[in-house]
Image (tube, rainbow, N blue to C red; front, side, top):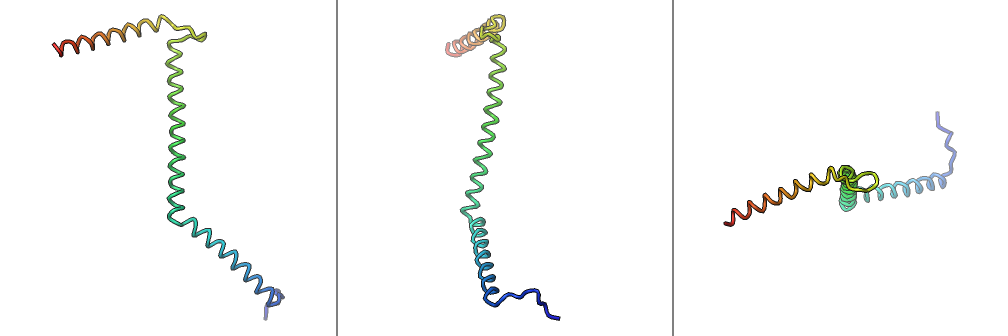
Amino acid sequence: MADTSDIRTPAQIEADIKRRREVLAETLDEIGVRVHPKTIVGDAKAKVVSNIDHTLGRAYVSVNKAVTEVKAQFVDEEGSPRLERVVPVALVAVGLVGLLALGARRRKG
């Protein structure tokens, strides 16, 4: 028994085949661009840059948070220094600088 559901003319069939060939050619061109080495390298570079940007952004946020937390230890909510915390740290820093200077002077002499 013959299939009579397709009652297109030969010209319609040829036009359909032509359209399908054009679509197939476009698809093959797109695949060719996607698998071209320059495209693959460009995509890889873009991904690396994106990852670096993301990592740097996260690092910036982390450092900013740490600086804010340290600053909060030495400055009150009004922006005034907390002398009970600043003075001991300053004394320790001066002591360390003094010890380093004394050690350097002993090595020279």
